[in-house]
Length: 215
Ligand code: MD3
Ligand code: FE
Image (tube, rainbow, N blue to C red; front, top):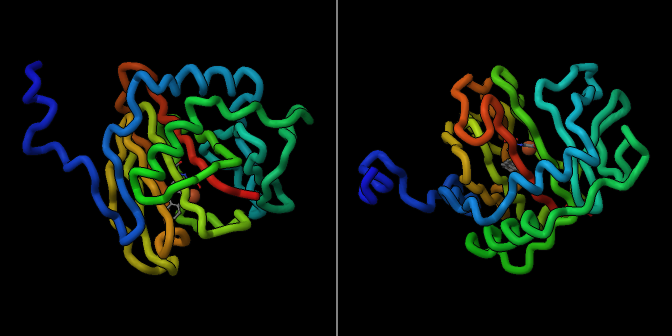
């Protein structure tokens, strides 16, 4: 492959706007960031599991967390906890590579001094999906959310401030980072059922890291 093949006409521009304060940073996460080693370390301590929503639905996405706080759901509600309900131990520490990428991406999108205290790690196998929702369990909506996509590509659905507004589709690939803040922070969003197109490094899975200031 020649160098030029990396930037064909089909390749999107490095930064795209999804909204006034929503940015896609294409290929922002690089191999040197060593995020996959971080995922392996987190999962050894706090394995992926399928949680149940208050509506009684078992999520098709498996999840775990790292950092001071972790997002959980069970039949009694959604919440952030300091302990992993599966083990009773604190969530694993956030790998320094994770925090560095999250801070750098936030800064690139104009959010200086983003300090995430929570990283939700979602794992999608083929067919897994995330229905339209808002992220409303955090205390402070003024901090942005940073999401890092790894492995198989996904179609991300980006909606409006009400559930009924139409959604835009954004294709997210390995290494893409998205930053949402300001007036876009409470938009509805979701992920379409994952297609089975295995990724060279991660095989038939997609892993998404979502960094938040939760507490
Ligand atoms: C858009 N995860 O875990 S993070 C989630 O790919 C979640 O696993 C997605 O949505 C995933 O809650 C993508 C993307 C995200 C997070 C917060 C947002 C998108 C957002 C807030 C406003 C608008
Ligand atoms: Fe979300």
